[in-house]
Image 1 (cartoon, rainbow, N blue to C red):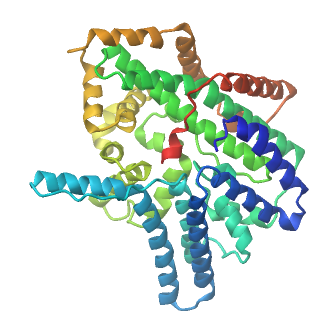
Image 2 (cartoon, rainbow, N blue to C red; image 1 turned 120 degrees about the vertical axis):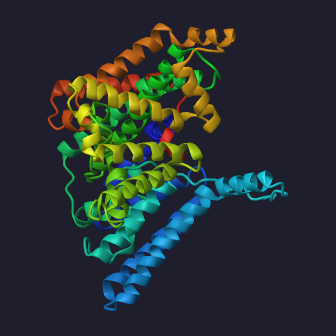
Image 3 (cartoon, rainbow, N blue to C red; image 1 turned 90 degrees about the horizontal axis):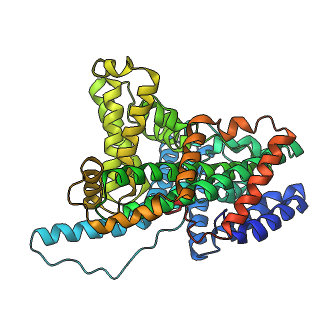
Length: 467
Protein backbone atom coordinates (compact mmCIF):
# COMPACT_ATOMS: atom_id res chain seq x y z
CA UNK A 1 0.00 0.00 0.00
CA UNK A 2 1.42 3.40 -0.96
CA UNK A 3 0.44 6.81 0.34
CA UNK A 4 -0.33 8.16 -3.14
CA UNK A 5 -3.10 5.67 -3.83
CA UNK A 6 -6.86 5.84 -3.62
CA UNK A 7 -7.09 2.89 -1.23
CA UNK A 8 -4.83 4.68 1.24
CA UNK A 9 -6.29 8.18 0.93
CA UNK A 10 -9.97 7.26 0.75
CA UNK A 11 -10.09 4.16 2.95
CA UNK A 12 -7.08 3.29 5.10
CA UNK A 13 -6.11 6.79 6.28
CA UNK A 14 -9.60 7.92 7.40
CA UNK A 15 -10.22 4.59 9.16
CA UNK A 16 -6.77 4.66 10.76
CA UNK A 17 -7.13 8.22 12.08
CA UNK A 18 -10.70 7.68 13.30
CA UNK A 19 -9.73 4.41 15.02
CA UNK A 20 -6.64 5.94 16.59
CA UNK A 21 -8.52 8.84 18.15
CA UNK A 22 -11.35 6.58 19.31
CA UNK A 23 -8.94 4.25 21.10
CA UNK A 24 -8.53 5.06 24.80
CA UNK A 25 -5.13 6.47 25.71
CA UNK A 26 -3.87 3.18 27.14
CA UNK A 27 -4.76 1.31 23.94
CA UNK A 28 -3.54 3.80 21.33
CA UNK A 29 -0.19 2.09 20.77
CA UNK A 30 -1.79 -1.33 20.54
CA UNK A 31 -4.30 -0.05 18.00
CA UNK A 32 -1.63 1.80 16.02
CA UNK A 33 0.50 -1.37 15.96
CA UNK A 34 -2.39 -3.40 14.56
CA UNK A 35 -3.08 -0.76 11.92
CA UNK A 36 0.62 -0.68 11.00
CA UNK A 37 0.81 -4.46 10.59
CA UNK A 38 -2.30 -4.31 8.41
CA UNK A 39 -0.66 -1.60 6.32
CA UNK A 40 2.61 -3.53 5.99
CA UNK A 41 1.06 -6.93 5.35
CA UNK A 42 -1.48 -5.68 2.83
CA UNK A 43 0.45 -6.91 -0.22
CA UNK A 44 2.30 -9.85 1.35
CA UNK A 45 1.18 -10.85 4.87
CA UNK A 46 4.05 -13.31 5.59
CA UNK A 47 6.54 -10.45 5.47
CA UNK A 48 4.92 -9.08 8.63
CA UNK A 49 6.25 -12.14 10.46
CA UNK A 50 9.82 -11.09 9.62
CA UNK A 51 9.25 -7.66 11.12
CA UNK A 52 7.67 -9.23 14.18
CA UNK A 53 10.65 -11.57 14.60
CA UNK A 54 13.08 -8.65 14.38
CA UNK A 55 10.98 -6.76 16.91
CA UNK A 56 10.95 -9.63 19.41
CA UNK A 57 14.71 -10.22 19.11
CA UNK A 58 15.66 -6.56 19.59
CA UNK A 59 13.19 -6.03 22.43
CA UNK A 60 14.59 -9.07 24.24
CA UNK A 61 18.20 -8.06 23.60
CA UNK A 62 17.54 -4.52 24.81
CA UNK A 63 15.94 -5.94 27.95
CA UNK A 64 18.99 -8.15 28.61
CA UNK A 65 21.43 -5.28 27.99
CA UNK A 66 19.64 -2.95 30.40
CA UNK A 67 19.26 -5.47 33.23
CA UNK A 68 22.54 -7.32 33.09
CA UNK A 69 25.59 -6.14 35.02
CA UNK A 70 27.97 -8.47 33.19
CA UNK A 71 29.78 -6.87 30.29
CA UNK A 72 30.07 -10.12 28.34
CA UNK A 73 26.35 -10.80 28.61
CA UNK A 74 25.51 -7.28 27.48
CA UNK A 75 27.92 -7.51 24.55
CA UNK A 76 26.50 -10.92 23.59
CA UNK A 77 22.96 -9.51 23.54
CA UNK A 78 24.13 -6.61 21.36
CA UNK A 79 25.92 -9.02 19.02
CA UNK A 80 22.80 -11.17 18.69
CA UNK A 81 20.71 -8.10 17.85
CA UNK A 82 23.13 -6.79 15.24
CA UNK A 83 23.81 -10.18 13.65
CA UNK A 84 20.14 -11.17 13.47
CA UNK A 85 19.17 -7.88 11.81
CA UNK A 86 22.08 -7.94 9.38
CA UNK A 87 21.40 -11.61 8.61
CA UNK A 88 17.78 -10.85 7.73
CA UNK A 89 18.83 -7.89 5.63
CA UNK A 90 21.73 -9.76 4.03
CA UNK A 91 19.71 -12.83 3.05
CA UNK A 92 16.66 -11.12 1.62
CA UNK A 93 18.51 -8.27 -0.04
CA UNK A 94 21.74 -9.84 -1.26
CA UNK A 95 21.14 -13.57 -1.75
CA UNK A 96 20.21 -13.27 -5.43
CA UNK A 97 23.05 -10.81 -6.01
CA UNK A 98 25.54 -13.15 -4.36
CA UNK A 99 24.42 -16.17 -6.36
CA UNK A 100 24.55 -14.30 -9.67
CA UNK A 101 28.10 -13.08 -8.99
CA UNK A 102 29.19 -16.51 -7.75
CA UNK A 103 27.90 -18.06 -10.98
CA UNK A 104 29.66 -15.35 -13.00
CA UNK A 105 32.95 -16.33 -11.38
CA UNK A 106 32.29 -20.03 -12.01
CA UNK A 107 31.51 -19.28 -15.66
CA UNK A 108 34.71 -17.23 -15.99
CA UNK A 109 36.67 -20.20 -14.59
CA UNK A 110 34.92 -22.58 -16.97
CA UNK A 111 33.15 -24.43 -14.17
CA UNK A 112 29.48 -25.45 -14.11
CA UNK A 113 27.26 -22.85 -12.50
CA UNK A 114 25.10 -23.48 -9.46
CA UNK A 115 21.49 -23.84 -10.46
CA UNK A 116 19.61 -22.31 -7.56
CA UNK A 117 15.86 -22.87 -7.46
CA UNK A 118 15.51 -20.28 -4.70
CA UNK A 119 14.64 -16.75 -5.80
CA UNK A 120 14.35 -14.46 -2.80
CA UNK A 121 11.74 -11.69 -2.85
CA UNK A 122 12.78 -8.47 -1.11
CA UNK A 123 10.34 -7.49 1.68
CA UNK A 124 9.26 -3.86 1.56
CA UNK A 125 11.01 -1.58 3.99
CA UNK A 126 13.40 -4.18 5.41
CA UNK A 127 16.37 -1.82 4.97
CA UNK A 128 14.58 0.80 7.04
CA UNK A 129 13.05 -1.14 9.90
CA UNK A 130 16.15 -3.30 10.51
CA UNK A 131 18.32 -0.17 10.84
CA UNK A 132 15.69 1.45 13.02
CA UNK A 133 15.23 -1.55 15.30
CA UNK A 134 18.98 -2.17 15.51
CA UNK A 135 19.63 1.42 16.59
CA UNK A 136 17.52 0.73 19.69
CA UNK A 137 19.79 -1.97 21.10
CA UNK A 138 22.91 0.02 20.19
CA UNK A 139 21.55 3.12 21.95
CA UNK A 140 20.62 1.08 25.03
CA UNK A 141 24.06 -0.52 25.08
CA UNK A 142 25.77 2.88 24.80
CA UNK A 143 23.55 4.39 27.46
CA UNK A 144 22.02 6.88 25.01
CA UNK A 145 18.53 5.50 25.69
CA UNK A 146 16.76 3.54 28.39
CA UNK A 147 15.29 0.15 27.53
CA UNK A 148 11.55 0.19 27.07
CA UNK A 149 9.54 -2.11 29.31
CA UNK A 150 6.30 -2.31 27.38
CA UNK A 151 6.59 -4.63 24.36
CA UNK A 152 3.58 -3.04 22.64
CA UNK A 153 5.22 0.38 22.82
CA UNK A 154 8.37 -1.01 21.23
CA UNK A 155 6.38 -2.86 18.56
CA UNK A 156 4.58 0.40 17.81
CA UNK A 157 7.92 2.20 17.42
CA UNK A 158 9.27 -0.38 14.96
CA UNK A 159 6.11 -0.83 12.89
CA UNK A 160 4.60 2.67 12.85
CA UNK A 161 3.12 2.85 9.35
CA UNK A 162 3.98 6.50 8.45
CA UNK A 163 7.73 5.80 8.25
CA UNK A 164 7.75 2.00 7.99
CA UNK A 165 8.56 1.22 4.38
CA UNK A 166 10.60 4.22 3.19
CA UNK A 167 11.71 6.16 6.24
CA UNK A 168 12.78 8.50 7.62
CA UNK A 169 14.87 6.15 9.77
CA UNK A 170 13.63 7.08 13.25
CA UNK A 171 15.98 6.34 16.11
CA UNK A 172 14.48 5.20 19.38
CA UNK A 173 16.10 8.05 21.27
CA UNK A 174 14.23 10.51 19.03
CA UNK A 175 10.78 9.21 19.98
CA UNK A 176 11.36 7.53 23.38
CA UNK A 177 9.81 10.43 25.30
CA UNK A 178 7.00 10.75 22.76
CA UNK A 179 6.10 7.10 23.27
CA UNK A 180 5.65 7.85 26.96
CA UNK A 181 3.73 11.08 26.52
CA UNK A 182 2.90 13.38 23.63
CA UNK A 183 0.37 16.04 22.85
CA UNK A 184 -2.39 15.93 20.26
CA UNK A 185 -3.26 19.46 19.23
CA UNK A 186 -5.24 21.02 16.43
CA UNK A 187 -2.18 23.03 15.41
CA UNK A 188 -0.04 19.90 15.14
CA UNK A 189 -2.77 18.08 13.21
CA UNK A 190 -3.18 21.02 10.81
CA UNK A 191 0.56 21.10 10.16
CA UNK A 192 0.41 17.36 9.54
CA UNK A 193 -2.28 17.89 6.91
CA UNK A 194 -0.13 20.58 5.26
CA UNK A 195 2.91 18.29 5.24
CA UNK A 196 0.91 15.43 3.75
CA UNK A 197 -0.73 17.64 1.10
CA UNK A 198 2.55 19.16 -0.04
CA UNK A 199 4.23 15.76 -0.06
CA UNK A 200 1.42 14.34 -2.18
CA UNK A 201 1.75 17.25 -4.60
CA UNK A 202 5.51 16.69 -4.89
CA UNK A 203 4.95 13.04 -5.65
CA UNK A 204 1.98 13.18 -8.02
CA UNK A 205 2.40 16.54 -9.76
CA UNK A 206 6.21 16.58 -10.09
CA UNK A 207 7.94 13.26 -9.39
CA UNK A 208 5.66 11.12 -11.54
CA UNK A 209 5.85 13.18 -14.77
CA UNK A 210 9.60 13.74 -14.29
CA UNK A 211 9.95 10.00 -13.79
CA UNK A 212 8.09 9.36 -17.02
CA UNK A 213 10.62 11.53 -18.87
CA UNK A 214 13.55 9.82 -17.16
CA UNK A 215 12.24 6.35 -18.02
CA UNK A 216 11.69 7.36 -21.63
CA UNK A 217 15.32 8.39 -22.03
CA UNK A 218 16.98 5.67 -19.95
CA UNK A 219 14.97 2.93 -21.67
CA UNK A 220 15.70 4.24 -25.17
CA UNK A 221 19.25 2.89 -25.52
CA UNK A 222 21.66 5.26 -27.28
CA UNK A 223 20.30 8.82 -27.29
CA UNK A 224 21.52 12.29 -28.20
CA UNK A 225 23.59 14.32 -25.76
CA UNK A 226 20.76 16.78 -25.16
CA UNK A 227 18.25 14.00 -24.47
CA UNK A 228 20.72 12.22 -22.15
CA UNK A 229 21.19 15.33 -20.02
CA UNK A 230 17.45 15.97 -20.09
CA UNK A 231 16.81 12.44 -18.83
CA UNK A 232 19.40 12.72 -16.07
CA UNK A 233 18.00 16.02 -14.82
CA UNK A 234 14.51 14.54 -14.98
CA UNK A 235 15.67 11.63 -12.83
CA UNK A 236 17.36 14.00 -10.37
CA UNK A 237 14.05 15.83 -9.98
CA UNK A 238 12.10 12.57 -9.81
CA UNK A 239 14.14 10.98 -7.03
CA UNK A 240 14.21 14.20 -5.03
CA UNK A 241 10.50 14.94 -5.22
CA UNK A 242 9.62 11.25 -4.90
CA UNK A 243 11.65 10.68 -1.74
CA UNK A 244 11.28 14.10 -0.12
CA UNK A 245 7.57 13.94 -0.95
CA UNK A 246 7.28 10.58 0.80
CA UNK A 247 9.23 11.94 3.77
CA UNK A 248 6.88 14.94 3.93
CA UNK A 249 3.87 12.64 3.91
CA UNK A 250 5.44 10.45 6.61
CA UNK A 251 6.23 13.45 8.80
CA UNK A 252 2.70 14.76 8.23
CA UNK A 253 1.10 11.47 9.22
CA UNK A 254 3.30 11.37 12.29
CA UNK A 255 2.11 14.84 13.29
CA UNK A 256 -1.51 13.74 12.86
CA UNK A 257 -0.75 10.93 15.34
CA UNK A 258 0.99 13.28 17.75
CA UNK A 259 4.59 12.36 16.83
CA UNK A 260 7.27 14.78 15.66
CA UNK A 261 9.72 13.09 13.30
CA UNK A 262 13.04 14.71 12.31
CA UNK A 263 13.64 16.52 9.04
CA UNK A 264 14.93 14.22 6.29
CA UNK A 265 15.76 16.73 3.51
CA UNK A 266 17.16 20.24 3.62
CA UNK A 267 17.43 21.62 0.06
CA UNK A 268 20.19 19.19 -1.00
CA UNK A 269 20.53 20.60 -4.51
CA UNK A 270 21.56 23.93 -2.94
CA UNK A 271 24.74 22.25 -1.68
CA UNK A 272 28.11 23.80 -2.43
CA UNK A 273 29.99 20.50 -1.98
CA UNK A 274 29.38 16.77 -1.82
CA UNK A 275 30.04 16.93 1.93
CA UNK A 276 27.23 19.46 2.29
CA UNK A 277 25.02 17.39 -0.01
CA UNK A 278 25.23 14.45 2.39
CA UNK A 279 24.31 16.70 5.30
CA UNK A 280 21.11 17.60 3.45
CA UNK A 281 20.11 14.46 1.50
CA UNK A 282 18.35 11.59 3.32
CA UNK A 283 19.55 13.06 6.60
CA UNK A 284 18.28 10.16 8.70
CA UNK A 285 20.43 7.66 6.75
CA UNK A 286 23.56 9.79 6.49
CA UNK A 287 23.45 10.59 10.22
CA UNK A 288 22.78 6.90 11.01
CA UNK A 289 25.83 5.85 8.99
CA UNK A 290 27.89 8.56 10.68
CA UNK A 291 26.92 7.66 14.26
CA UNK A 292 26.72 3.87 13.98
CA UNK A 293 29.43 3.14 11.41
CA UNK A 294 31.78 6.03 10.62
CA UNK A 295 32.47 7.10 14.21
CA UNK A 296 32.85 3.50 15.55
CA UNK A 297 35.36 2.87 12.74
CA UNK A 298 37.41 5.74 14.10
CA UNK A 299 35.94 8.63 12.15
CA UNK A 300 38.61 11.26 11.59
CA UNK A 301 40.44 10.55 14.85
CA UNK A 302 43.04 8.11 13.54
CA UNK A 303 44.90 10.09 10.97
CA UNK A 304 44.28 11.31 7.45
CA UNK A 305 44.69 7.99 5.66
CA UNK A 306 42.34 6.17 8.03
CA UNK A 307 39.80 8.98 7.63
CA UNK A 308 39.81 8.50 3.84
CA UNK A 309 39.43 4.74 4.26
CA UNK A 310 36.54 5.19 6.69
CA UNK A 311 34.75 7.62 4.36
CA UNK A 312 35.16 5.28 1.39
CA UNK A 313 34.02 2.23 3.37
CA UNK A 314 30.97 3.97 4.81
CA UNK A 315 29.85 5.24 1.41
CA UNK A 316 30.47 1.86 -0.23
CA UNK A 317 28.26 0.26 2.40
CA UNK A 318 25.78 3.10 1.99
CA UNK A 319 25.62 2.34 -1.71
CA UNK A 320 25.16 -1.35 -0.99
CA UNK A 321 22.39 -0.49 1.48
CA UNK A 322 20.46 1.04 -1.40
CA UNK A 323 20.51 -2.13 -3.48
CA UNK A 324 22.23 -5.36 -4.43
CA UNK A 325 23.96 -4.11 -7.57
CA UNK A 326 27.45 -3.12 -8.66
CA UNK A 327 25.94 0.16 -9.83
CA UNK A 328 25.03 1.10 -6.26
CA UNK A 329 28.46 0.09 -5.01
CA UNK A 330 30.11 2.25 -7.68
CA UNK A 331 27.72 5.11 -6.88
CA UNK A 332 28.69 4.89 -3.21
CA UNK A 333 32.37 4.55 -4.07
CA UNK A 334 32.31 7.71 -6.20
CA UNK A 335 30.64 9.68 -3.43
CA UNK A 336 33.11 8.27 -0.91
CA UNK A 337 36.00 9.29 -3.12
CA UNK A 338 34.67 12.81 -3.52
CA UNK A 339 34.10 13.12 0.23
CA UNK A 340 37.71 12.04 0.81
CA UNK A 341 38.95 14.53 -1.78
CA UNK A 342 37.05 17.34 -0.12
CA UNK A 343 38.61 16.43 3.22
CA UNK A 344 41.99 17.23 1.68
CA UNK A 345 41.56 21.00 1.63
CA UNK A 346 44.86 21.61 -0.16
CA UNK A 347 43.64 19.91 -3.32
CA UNK A 348 40.27 21.67 -3.36
CA UNK A 349 41.30 25.21 -2.42
CA UNK A 350 40.66 26.35 -5.99
CA UNK A 351 37.13 24.96 -5.74
CA UNK A 352 36.45 26.83 -2.50
CA UNK A 353 37.53 30.09 -4.13
CA UNK A 354 34.82 29.85 -6.80
CA UNK A 355 31.66 31.97 -6.50
CA UNK A 356 28.79 30.27 -4.68
CA UNK A 357 26.70 29.87 -7.85
CA UNK A 358 29.52 28.01 -9.59
CA UNK A 359 30.08 25.77 -6.55
CA UNK A 360 26.39 24.89 -6.41
CA UNK A 361 26.33 24.26 -10.16
CA UNK A 362 29.47 22.10 -10.07
CA UNK A 363 28.15 20.06 -7.14
CA UNK A 364 24.82 19.51 -8.88
CA UNK A 365 26.60 18.36 -12.06
CA UNK A 366 28.68 15.88 -10.05
CA UNK A 367 25.53 14.56 -8.39
CA UNK A 368 23.84 14.28 -11.80
CA UNK A 369 26.65 12.12 -13.16
CA UNK A 370 26.50 9.79 -10.16
CA UNK A 371 22.70 9.49 -10.49
CA UNK A 372 23.31 7.70 -13.80
CA UNK A 373 24.74 4.72 -11.91
CA UNK A 374 21.81 4.89 -9.49
CA UNK A 375 19.20 4.81 -12.27
CA UNK A 376 20.76 2.66 -15.02
CA UNK A 377 19.74 -0.98 -15.28
CA UNK A 378 23.32 -2.27 -15.11
CA UNK A 379 26.96 -1.25 -15.33
CA UNK A 380 27.07 -1.57 -19.13
CA UNK A 381 23.92 0.53 -19.41
CA UNK A 382 25.39 3.19 -17.11
CA UNK A 383 28.63 3.45 -19.09
CA UNK A 384 26.73 3.63 -22.37
CA UNK A 385 24.50 6.35 -21.00
CA UNK A 386 27.46 8.37 -19.75
CA UNK A 387 28.99 8.18 -23.24
CA UNK A 388 25.74 9.56 -24.62
CA UNK A 389 25.95 12.49 -22.17
CA UNK A 390 29.35 13.47 -23.50
CA UNK A 391 29.17 12.27 -27.12
CA UNK A 392 26.47 12.07 -29.80
CA UNK A 393 28.15 9.32 -31.83
CA UNK A 394 26.13 6.35 -33.11
CA UNK A 395 22.75 7.85 -32.30
CA UNK A 396 20.02 5.87 -34.03
CA UNK A 397 17.46 7.84 -36.09
CA UNK A 398 14.63 6.04 -34.33
CA UNK A 399 15.58 7.65 -31.01
CA UNK A 400 14.46 10.98 -32.40
CA UNK A 401 10.94 9.76 -31.76
CA UNK A 402 11.39 10.23 -28.00
CA UNK A 403 11.43 13.99 -28.59
CA UNK A 404 7.69 13.66 -29.19
CA UNK A 405 7.36 12.72 -25.52
CA UNK A 406 10.11 14.68 -23.82
CA UNK A 407 9.44 18.07 -25.32
CA UNK A 408 5.68 18.19 -24.94
CA UNK A 409 4.57 21.46 -23.28
CA UNK A 410 3.25 19.51 -20.27
CA UNK A 411 6.61 17.87 -19.50
CA UNK A 412 8.63 21.00 -20.25
CA UNK A 413 6.38 23.00 -17.93
CA UNK A 414 6.69 20.34 -15.21
CA UNK A 415 10.49 20.32 -15.49
CA UNK A 416 10.54 24.13 -15.30
CA UNK A 417 8.30 24.20 -12.22
CA UNK A 418 10.40 21.47 -10.61
CA UNK A 419 13.55 23.54 -11.09
CA UNK A 420 11.90 26.68 -9.72
CA UNK A 421 10.72 24.82 -6.60
CA UNK A 422 14.10 23.13 -6.07
CA UNK A 423 16.12 26.35 -6.18
CA UNK A 424 13.57 29.06 -5.46
CA UNK A 425 11.17 27.82 -2.79
CA UNK A 426 11.63 27.08 0.93
CA UNK A 427 11.48 23.56 2.33
CA UNK A 428 8.19 22.13 3.56
CA UNK A 429 9.59 22.05 7.10
CA UNK A 430 10.08 25.83 7.20
CA UNK A 431 7.03 26.75 5.11
CA UNK A 432 4.62 24.90 7.43
CA UNK A 433 5.96 26.35 10.68
CA UNK A 434 3.58 29.27 10.41
CA UNK A 435 0.34 28.26 8.73
CA UNK A 436 -1.93 31.07 7.60
CA UNK A 437 -5.40 30.64 6.07
CA UNK A 438 -3.88 31.36 2.66
CA UNK A 439 -1.20 28.71 3.08
CA UNK A 440 -3.77 26.15 4.25
CA UNK A 441 -5.87 27.06 1.23
CA UNK A 442 -2.88 26.43 -1.06
CA UNK A 443 -2.30 23.06 0.58
CA UNK A 444 -5.97 22.14 0.19
CA UNK A 445 -6.03 23.08 -3.50
CA UNK A 446 -2.78 21.19 -4.19
CA UNK A 447 -4.20 18.14 -2.43
CA UNK A 448 -7.39 18.22 -4.53
CA UNK A 449 -5.37 18.71 -7.71
CA UNK A 450 -3.10 15.80 -6.74
CA UNK A 451 -6.09 13.50 -6.24
CA UNK A 452 -7.56 14.58 -9.57
CA UNK A 453 -4.29 13.97 -11.42
CA UNK A 454 -3.70 10.71 -9.55
CA UNK A 455 -6.94 9.31 -10.93
CA UNK A 456 -5.55 9.74 -14.47
CA UNK A 457 -1.99 8.46 -13.85
CA UNK A 458 -0.96 4.89 -14.51
CA UNK A 459 2.66 5.66 -13.59
CA UNK A 460 3.00 5.92 -9.80
CA UNK A 461 6.11 4.16 -8.39
CA UNK A 462 7.90 5.01 -5.17
CA UNK A 463 11.61 4.69 -5.89
CA UNK A 464 12.72 3.98 -2.32
CA UNK A 465 10.22 1.15 -1.89
CA UNK A 466 12.73 -1.12 -3.67
CA UNK A 467 15.49 -0.26 -1.20
